[in-house]
Image (cartoon, rainbow, N blue to C red; front, side):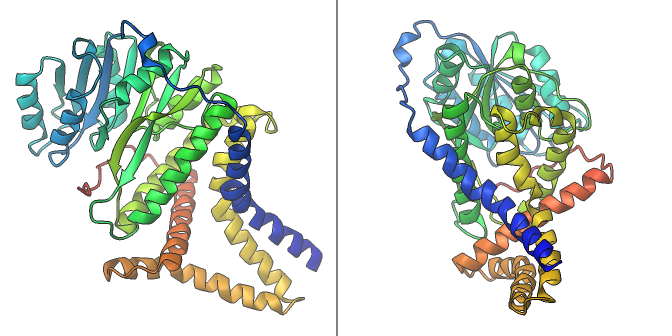
Length: 391
């Protein structure tokens, strides 16, 4: 019986190690053997018309900077369209956008008099577009001048069906969990880039910046969250090419408050499990191409909180036969306290890198677990109010 618990304990520990360490290392080794051709934007003489689509809700603190980053794009001004849906904003968001509309005819605003939610807004906006190339973004994601060309270049020159931008997180205050979130997103971007090189697809674009051919866009059904992930999986299911473009640079402010990020991660987890249920068939065959990447990159991570819980249970079983595992149980008990310590350290503005990082990891996996329980509890959560912007 002790051997059973020991093997089970090792398997549980292997789950997060494989997803966060082994699989990324494997992708890096494979990507390093691939010769990457530099983007040659001069080959496109006539850039196509493109529509930037996004929804807003009370974004007065960022909308000015957002529109400035789009207006000053290197993309041909006569080919650029900006379509915004305001989800019954009650602050100055609409007024600020209308000031820009008075100066730039390429901007169009659709105002709602009741809350609809981001998904419904986006679905309605797409129906209003007339271009074959679409770019989706968020109000707090700011583009570099070359971002638009980099995205569209992939759709044309590389025949991609969908392109993920390179979102770099930033924190003006550099407080709380911002450093952990920035590290994690940089890690994710590198992994997605390596997947893109190795397979010609990535396991999920970032909704803050991606381009897609209109023919490949699919309306996300009511009740689903994580529309960017849903649409990515739909494109993959049709054998489409989904690439990551490092030159499509943009910047997004990161949450520095643990509790705010915790709530956001619960919502993300709920959306991920809904998408997994809908697209679970893409996992098979699990040893090949997308099934392997989907399982290794995403599903194993979603299993990590369960692996932590079950490894703790296994450690209890082993401790009856091996006294050393009593120390292991003490370490596990301390890990449980780390999220609370992380929140206290954040409020006290004290930085202890190791403790903050471990606490953040445990807190985010707890959010994953709570998202799963909301999923099996048939949560109908859909509307979302964006957190206070950290700029």
